Image (cartoon, rainbow, N blue to C red; front, side, top):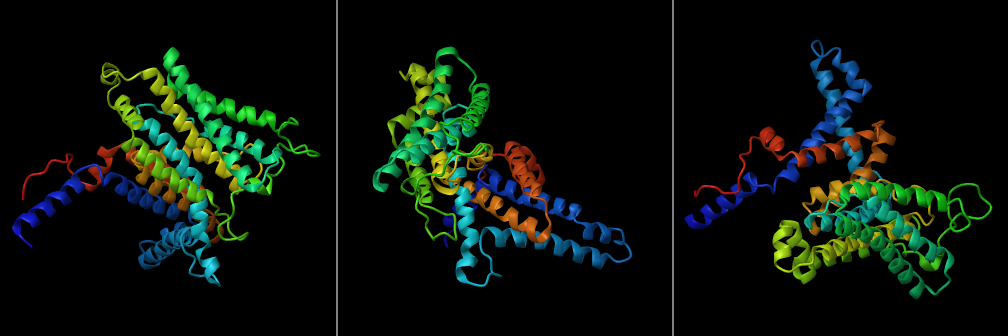
Length: 393
């Protein structure tokens, strides 16, 4: 290899190390280390062994390794590949669970990534998921059509529901200057309480029940399952992958995406360039809400198939972390969504087999947010100098 090529490789590697590209990876690694420490602290066997650390250090470190290693082994077997299962289908079932969780998380992450890159801090993913689920759910429950019309119609109506709820935020910002953070927080409450109310009325509540739950979605409006009834993964996963490609094209190859990015970089310069800020704000939030509404359709027409108060789960909150971890890049959001899907899927196995509280996974997710939000802290921990510019070698 020539000296010039060697020098270029060194410069590229140093750019990665000293730049921001490595920060999300180190944030994940650091969070897993912190999670391992918390697992050890919470374990009674480790606590007992710690009392004899000076007289029997080998026992302490052996117990520590077995506890932390067992927890992350259970996380792996619950989220990626269960090598202890009795047949091949059960071995790969954890991966399907990860992808099933990742589908709505990634779609909502894409929704927030678009708004983040456009300079709008949309944290209303929860409300937009709920509106998408309500609209799609009503069509899926009460409209009677053949499968090839019913499912696409329910999906489109759900997307419209999310887009409508998101566009209201953009409209309020464009016309009154309202802060989108406050508005989306309030809209989350409005959507949740509206769903709670409707689930107690004949409009959505299942007949002959006092519980706040809707009738089941008709079979003609359901996303088909990919691997039969033994797995929850459905065709919504491929819809999510298509949304990733669409979002990449929209933000990087379309004129609309250029306007979105322009107001995100500098709204004043965008206005001088002739971009209508008010209209663009509405469009940004409508597209963002549409993707979150699509996530709602994967819930009601896919995994849940009933409308309940918890139809949005915590996906709207997780999506904020996913969008930040993916640096608002569609491919990064996809990777982060799969990571968080794996954490959610594996947490169940960790708790069942290792008695590790599910809250530990929540702490890991929160630590990821902390470290991503504080790059100087990560650089200080790993002694990485700031700056992408490096000297020539």
